[in-house]
Structure formats: C-alpha cells, structure tokens
Length: 235
Image 1 (cartoon, rainbow, N blue to C red):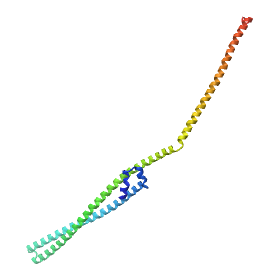
Image 2 (cartoon, rainbow, N blue to C red; image 1 turned 180 degrees about the vertical axis):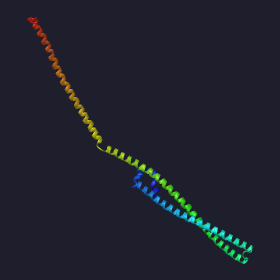
Image 3 (cartoon, rainbow, N blue to C red; image 1 turned 60 degrees about the vertical axis):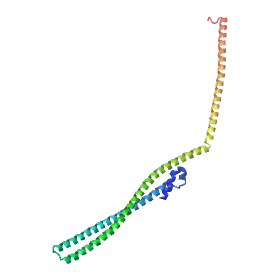
Image 4 (tube, helix red, strand yellow; image 1 turned 120 degrees about the vertical axis):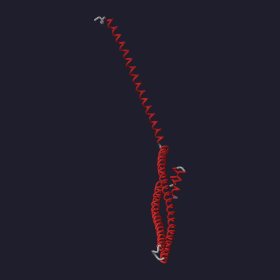
C-alpha cells in the first residue's frame, strides 16, 4: 500500500520531474497491482474457509437446539406415560430426569456453538470488508495505472520533441541554411550577370546588322542611279 501512496503522488507534481525520480513507475505500479491481486486471492480463500466454519457452526447450533427440543419432548412423553399408567412414576421420573439432563447438555452445547457462530460471522463480515476494500483499491490503482501510462507516453513524446528542437537549435543547421542562402544569392547574381552579358552581345550584333542593312540600302540606291545614268534601266 505504501508503494501506491508514494507512486500516485505523481499527480501532485509535474509529470516529467516525478517520473525522473522513479526508475520505472509503470513496472512498479503493475507489480503493486499483482501483489494486491495475490492478497485478494488469499483473502478470498480465507473468506471461503471462515464462511465454511460459520456454516458448520450454525448447523451444529441448529442440531444442538433440535436435540434439546427432542429430549424435552421425550421427558414430556415419559411423564405422560406415567400419568396414563403406562409407565411407573419412579421410572418415568428417572428417565425424564435423564432426558432433561441431556437437554441441558445440548442447550449448553448450543450456547457455546452460538458464541462460536457469532465469532465466525464477525470474522466473515471483517473479511468481506477487506475483500471489498482490496477490490476497490485494485480497481482504483488500475485506473491510475491507465492514467499514468498515458501521462508517461505524453511526457516521453514531449521530451523527444523538445530534445529534437534543442538539437536543432544547438546544431549548425541554422548556419548551414545561411550559407545556402548566400550561395543561392551568389548563383542568382551570377546568372543575372551572364544574362546581362548575353543581352550586351546581342545588342552589338543587332547594331552591326542594322549598320549593314543601311549600307545595303544605300548601295542599292546608288546602283539604281548609276543604271539610270547609263540608261541601263530601260533594258
């Protein structure tokens, strides 16, 4: 019981800190419940045995009571026989006295048995109360165990996530990302530079082509003028 009182104080503190103080709270709780169930089995066995003794004692009390009544009836019958002259008065008195003596013995046995029966009944009531208490405790601790297991799983999951977050913060991931950003920026700048160079080369070619196209047009015009002067265009 002390194990459970100590164990279930977890609910009074932070889950993680309380769990850290215990080597294995789940196994401790499960073992405690198994011990309680063993105690319950023993209590049920004792209860059955005491109930059997109580039943036997009651049966003996009933038997002694019945026997006492039987001896009393026999004494009455003997006296009636003497009254009806079926038996001498002295013999009837002697036998009736013996019957009443037997009745007193049975009555004494009945009274002693009744005391034993009352004692057994009291023991049965006490054992019944213990059995009910054990059953209630086991049920409560099993529910506590379910809650504890859930809290341990949550705590472990939280600890794992927090650990991962701590590792991320303490690792070089952030600096790697910064270097990657810098490298990407450099690559983008380099690509832009090449693009500008390509545009510049294209513009020069366009200027050359434009200049050439202009000379060709002028040459064609000069050719036409020359032909006109020579009169060759008429042909």
